[in-house]
Image (tube, rainbow, N blue to C red; front, side):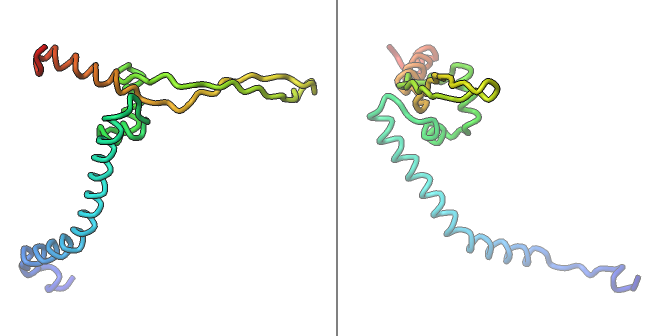
Length: 138
């Protein structure tokens, strides 16, 4: 090992890191601004159009508005924190051939519609909680 490698000269790391940080920030700032503004616009438009007019909302939109993941939303549904709205279902009848016997069998299945969140129940639950905590007066 040479003497030059064993003893390092002190370097001015603050000027290098400040310059590097300024260049990285200046390059990333336009991309961050556009991504954040698009997300904010989507969230606000969803809240204004869906929440004000409709008693139901899709799972994806509900998770986006409330800032939760789909896994957390599924846990909330399983625990009864969020209620699903009743959706129409259809009955499908199929004729299938049994592999073992070779005979035709009729199979009846029920297909449920897309699962929607019941916003009226969500609002009422939050209102009742606010009354209980005295955030609002009766």
